[in-house]
Image (cartoon, rainbow, N blue to C red):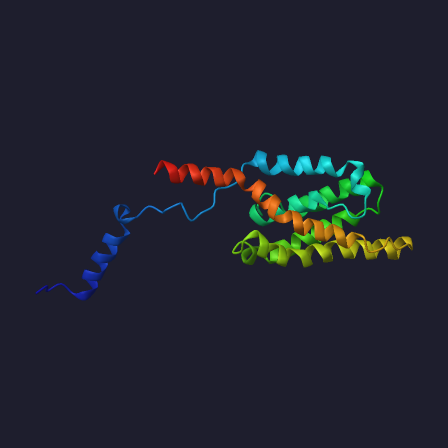
Length: 193
């Protein structure tokens, strides 16, 4: 029988558990790999360039820059924030000659909605994600259209709703393409073990 007081036995057990040799390595498999900085900003830059082309003037054209910004705001929120959306929206407003802040407001609203629902969205596959994202895109595209109609005094019609529908249809494709480098890394890791 041990005659040491209870306090000293628990202190010894606590000291033994605090030693560095008792630490276990963390399995990194549940953590998703961080996307390359070149991948994130390269895709945003390419979609910004595509947004400068005249096809964007078609009212039903999907906003590819908004789509990619939403994707990266969902998967890399520390690299792509609402400030990024605001600045890129201002650049598009200046380029297109629209009311200053129209696209900026749209992008900030969409990225705010993504930020609010981020934890929930990451639990689902892309098809369920688009059910959550479609109302965000619809509201994000509607408010600037209503503001434009109010300030300018002309209503452009409801064709912009098709833009949100096309963005929702493109979401699984964008999700697949932009996560493809991670899938290849995961497949290579599984084949090496």
